[in-house]
Image (cartoon, rainbow, N blue to C red; front, side, top):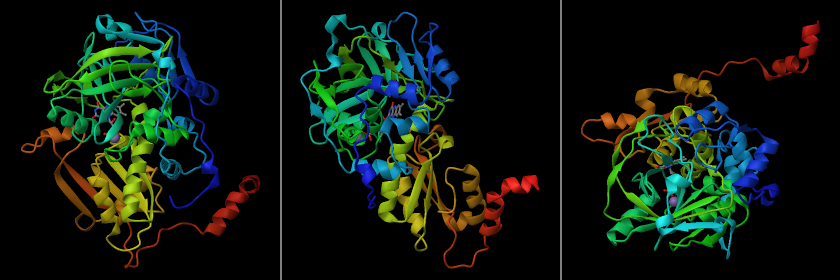
Length: 468
Ligand SMILES: Cc1cc2nc3c(=O)[nH]c(=O)nc-3n(C[C@H](O)[C@H](O)[C@H](O)COP(=O)(O)O)c2cc1C
Ligand SMILES: [Mn+2]
């Protein structure tokens, strides 16, 4: 963070909208076009899974004239493209950009206002190709809607929250208690007021990345998106709620989360790769549907074979943990939220330990973080944290369970299926911190390898070794 690199000062490419990002992916990566008509009921999900890491463009969805795009965050390459990353140190570059928050710029008009439907004419499930994501989901779900909301004290918040379609202008919403939207909603409910929202579906990728950042409640994710893209997000005033929406979004739904109202919501196939159970949850009433001419519907697949969800969240969330960890231990080098841990439950941190016990401070802040890490492991900087075999080796050879681990019981977590089976404490979970760093004060057996010189000699002359 302290290091400066002039190249970072150059403004990154700011994609104006989803269409510009799609063009970039088509030119610099892979975009698969599905021309055959697909059904919204799981067939879009199956095509997403089949496309693997390639971005997907479903040209025709049965019963709709709006194409569906997906997999825009399906691997690290696309995150690099989305942010136009210029160095090999994405976390540092990301945090460097975040130092200059850029508030949104309100403009008078924008393409999202090309079509506006309100009142009795509103029929959202008839208008939009909203998918059934997994087989046993409770219904059709918007999984890619960025919820824009405002609190009188904390200001704007943008975050992804699933919406279960319940009628022409109604939806159920899931807000984990750990999220800011839940805080905003509870505060509005205490005032006996609805919480106005705008739901953004399909937009410039910086808004999606900003919507999964985990800062303090007064952090304006619009300003985070501006910082990431190097230019303010252009916004327009909404038609039926007192909020701003991105001017270049494909689709924006306006509405409010009703106070003191709960209805069954779920089940829904979640990032944990299990169905999250049905529960009594708040209800959204929509008041307007705004969209561009010939809009694109962007979706995100969550489930057993998900990719988007893990890669979209990995950089912002790893950077949040990196920053928190570095505050207690300046020589923290890198943080990785592993795909096996669903991009959230398992964190691996590498550091140069300066004194004994320091890794436990790092583990404490990582486990305490709202992100919801369940198992965290600190390793020395010689371990490649992106290689699970290396991390396992550190655990196998540098770690003693009784001496080097500690746990926190009964802490809140997002949707951990195993927490439901704890008898007394319900959905609270146990968290484990593991320090797999080498001791500083004990002569430890040395890691065995051939000498650098001999290895280099053979590597540099390998062809001659083969030819004799
Ligand atoms: C595809 C996707 C769907 C998500 N759905 C939900 C959800 O339904 N409920 C929820 O509480 N968090 C959900 N999240 C997580 C939040 O969007 C994320 O943790 C965000 O950082 C919270 O923002 P906040 O820090 O402003 O509270 C989802 C994340 C992704 C990537
Ligand atoms: Mn927030």
